[in-house]
Length: 236
Image (cartoon, rainbow, N blue to C red):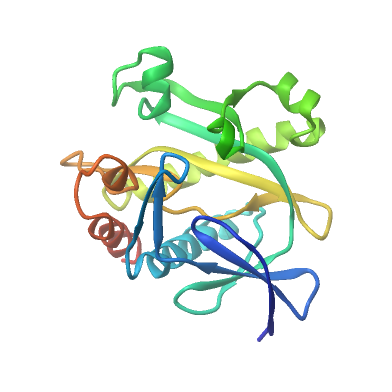
């Protein structure tokens, strides 16, 4: 069991701790909910545990399919052991149906299904509201190594294929999701951060009920109820 050391960083949803192994970190999932770059906030007891557990299940699904991530193991209700990574300042979003910002930006109708998955890159910067960027921007601003982008895109599409099937088998539509990447201690590129209803849109396949953070963003119902439904289904 790694020994937790000093706090390295605290974000909106997680606290990162160093351990007695310089290559390993502990992620503590907080009970805080935020939206609109931190403008809307709430404390929801049990949210951290739900996100940690859902993320752990998803990381294990991906690991079995050969996807490289920073995940090592779930340590407790709210904590996960991960590899330390040099995080890139790029969010990779894969969209299967139109929802969220692309509806406003390009005029798609919410729920419109794309002919093939759409991959977009965003600059991870709350002050600038995570703007859409192209590969030239990423290269110019050194947000990620340009040679890593094909791997990031290919990995994101593989994850989309794996998780779309996984959620479909459990009565859920994977609408879209966000991934973050970094360089792991062995020099490889892998997925970092979390993969949870905080970072994906998940709709009930029969009713269309939203089971993700949009419940909190737009006051569509109890956030924790939606997350518990997701966990219950993927734990079967």
